[in-house]
Amino acid sequence: MVDSQSITLKANQAALILEVDEDGAIDINVAALEEEGLASALCQAIAYKIVHDEQFQAELMDMLDFEDD
Image (cartoon, rainbow, N blue to C red):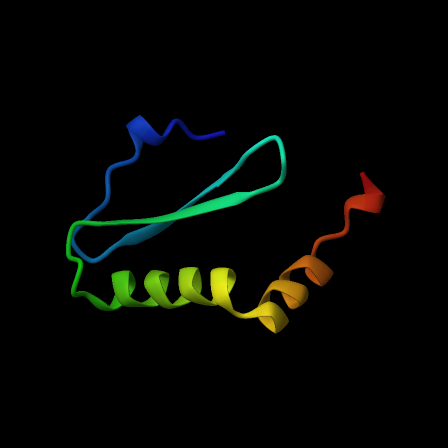
């Protein structure tokens, strides 16, 4: 696991930060030095789809295979 305090982004990078609470609720944040850059825009778009697009959510959950653990 990476400590979020140790992450240093370059100007052309962005990161999605996902936090899941004990109830399974997901909080999504985007970190970026350049909020108007392509990397930031892509992270914002992915974050939007995770929150608002039920089909995208279902596709992501289908990709996860918890039964093999």
